[in-house]
Length: 441
Ligand SMILES: Cc1cc2nc3c(=O)[nH]c(=O)nc-3n(C[C@H](O)[C@H](O)[C@H](O)COP(=O)(O)OP(=O)(O)OC[C@H]3O[C@@H](n4cnc5c(N)ncnc54)[C@H](O)[C@@H]3O)c2cc1C
Image 1 (cartoon, rainbow, N blue to C red):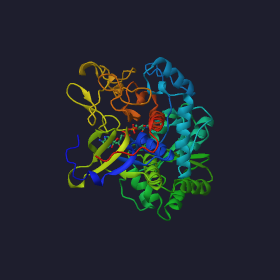
Image 2: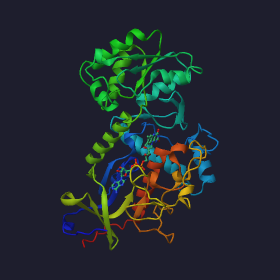
Image 3: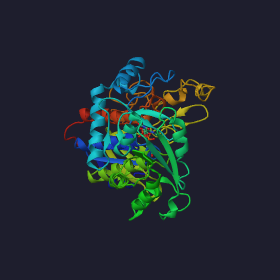
Image 4: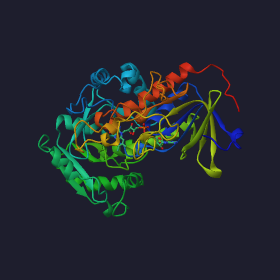
């Protein structure tokens, strides 16, 4: 609860406050400003810094069979029927499509285009030398999808300085079904000014320095040997990635594509930058990096405290969307005996006892019950209190904090984050009293 009210009059007042700046929080902020609401958003970097940049809608169901779906919409239908409490079961597929299309349009307008294969998932190669199905693919990775499909002669290039990207491992895992796949490691520091061990984000910014792309062409060119496509780690620029890939393709005379890397993920960082800048331009008041530490609800309005001590700031809003993620992001906390939601103390759907959180076998195909813990919601995406009714009239929840889904195994992370954000904003919009003044208490 808010304890000190001394600065309450200096609060930022808005229609909707979004707590969290992962994909669900960013999408919620986008949908809310697009509907004309005034929006404030608080959070510290979310799962996007780790994410591959692929936007999955639905890939695997039932998880215990490992059944992968080429048609994500058929998979959404199946999961909605089999798991009636899954958040997807509360949305029509058209709504899920509309919400994702809206985010894709925003990303495209901000120079981060995504591509898909009609209404179907595309198969894309992974860092581990396997492949996975995903729905929307960053354009920088698209030629990799095409090369894999046609099994074109292809060279995967690793950089000696980027230790986590192992070109040999990628090729080793795929070579049986893709005989024309080869690999080569090149040393960048002979020609590009980088240190002997770099992370992807630093390398991506280095790639944008004058002359570095030409140097890269010089290093890769001699190893092409008939390759029609070249795959590189997804570090080809932070903002100028499209231009860099265009230049590489033109100068090498082959298709060039990126392959997702380990965290820090450059495609994830690109998403963060585009959302952060694009939402600021649209007038979202951003409280980054700040956590909401306490709250008060009076006369139907929320007063949220962001940050601590002298730097504490206040947000007053009519509605709140809780998009605080799971354990890593602190949206959920695992105590010794139970899982709790730390901010509003909302009840968390969870296994009866801690002993049931995990199955004995870590790799059990059914997944672990703890991964389906989370907030139970009503059809308006409002978290329920212990009496099973909405905890507050205008408190909504979105993203991975929701119960009854295991996004990692089901491969529905981004689709769920975006569509539940859309559902929550729409529900708020339907409830919002026109021209209602938020009381100043
Ligand atoms: C390693 C990894 C790989 C992934 N790969 C894919 C992929 O290939 N395809 C795909 O579709 N998806 C992928 N995703 C998932 C995708 O990023 C998810 O959609 C996402 O993680 C869930 O988003 P979220 O916004 O619900 O939660 P999070 O991203 O966890 O964000 C939660 C946010 O809430 C904030 N927060 C928590 N408590 C507070 C508080 N009190 N006050 C203010 N803010 C708070 C945190 O700071 C954070 O910003 C991946 C994710 C990870 C981690």
